[in-house]
Image (cartoon, rainbow, N blue to C red; front, side, top):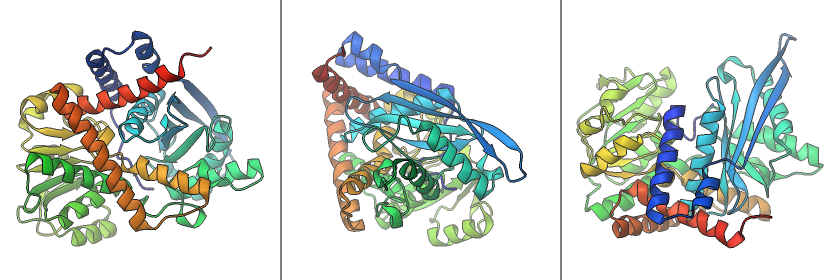
Length: 423
């Protein structure tokens, strides 16, 4: 299973940080109190039981969730994660973040998220398929191309999306490719989807470096999380002239001052399951990677890794958040006061949802784009969104994160005001 949006965030910290950011931005915007009340709560929460027959003939019952935070600007959009520790609080927080992420990059979606409490590593392919199909049936009352479009997330992948699409399609009597994104290309997936989040990080970093007067050629980069997002981001930044001095995964990291051979690192990880032990590199911990002497830090795996305790030790000039919620609210303030620029997650890692939007559009039209067209449109969308956030940053004299929330809340609030309160 792949982890396209990074590993699990610390749930209470993530929800608390999301609420604090909303409050802060709402105060600066002088947001209508009624609109703020609505935005602080999810629109719809669905909890389902998922009974399936295991390979040994026994029956197990799993629990699943689908949360829709806001639908004002369009159908809900957000991934589905399979993990033993996923819970309603985490899913609710991530659904809220998806609302802001979609608004920041100005795509016509609201935010949603889903999860199933399970350990997919302990399930056979048959059990995983039966779990997915039954979960799809249970949440089919609220998903659909014009209602809510799931996507891959932690420990789900294109195959899981294919099962969701097929189950939904069988129940409707015809193929419905636009019900999910992140599907295999052979059944309506989009070129460029797998690398979209990582490439979005690269484009956002490129924009930030330009405005900060940083020369990417020769810049030293540390990437926490050498997975689907981190590896693509590392490779993209290296192609721009950066020197990748450190990478890590869940077991730990490696450091080399002259720079790592990413091709060799990828082959080593594929054969051993980890970057740890890579010949010629110094072993480091994930905690040490955060405070390495580097120019650009890309936290692309874990949530809540930059905290009050270590924010004062971060030595990077630029932090580009490939993961969801890697920086606490308090740590973000510390970094801002220290003059360290942070490209927030709702902008830096929005490439995945942007290309998911492209895939949805292609599915609705049955007209498919080339990879070059997808990546070109992704670059334009990230570049334009960065510019919009940067303008607000300068206007209000705030951090990039606060500016991103100002942009997101203003767009959602404006749409809510125009539509009015029903009935």
